[in-house]
Image (tube, rainbow, N blue to C red):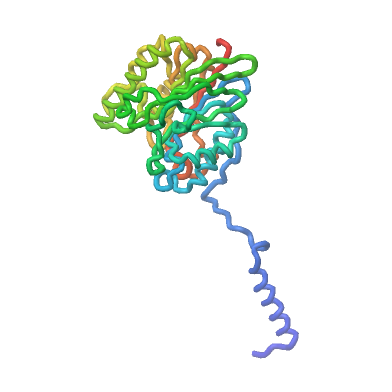
Length: 327
């Protein structure tokens, strides 16, 4: 078959167009993965300017490159995104392993300060919270520096170090101010022992009873907030067939109230993999007088963070709000 000179020229021209149409990313659309919905980029804050807002969040091996979420930078970005977006005033965080990674988180949070249990501000030799191999789990406090003044910090119940799995609670005395109102608060950061076998249960029960005895005798009339990873539910234990290790608190309803009981009663989980609530806020009756009714929430960010469990944490933030005027 033969072609005329004009026909050959046309074929060559069209071939050139085909070749160059495939070159350069500016002219080639990026395929869209219709199976992976785009996350929302923001959400409405929960904290308000007229209330004192508390959150607790287990950050799952935050700063440990070998355990928990594998991409530490992404985990930090996601944690910063949630804390900034929720706009709470005071956070108790658990399972922070790296001090430098925690400091990077603070640097990303506008208006917040914080410290870990091994910080020099803590009145002890910090022996319970050293970076042993840079993976010792530590509790930490994050707070809005224009609303909260930290007066002192110290570990408590260190004689029950074994029962608390090497993580005795951290007691922080602080003053919080909202508008013209202020309150002195004893904030106790807790990360109780994990797991469900008989030994685990017995150790958690001994630790819980020691904590109640301490609060009964040391802070009988104070505004007390105990918040963190309690590693047990309060309606019944996560150890099958057993009472909650915190039953003594639940039974003493004149002096102590769990706002998070509402979550337990309504089967709203605080973790990604189990139906129970193990992250709690425990109030003394003096603090509970300021509680904003029905403000407790287990904030579940899957709509905002793709693959939340593998990139961020296996726990959800748990939140409550308080008005500093009597309700």
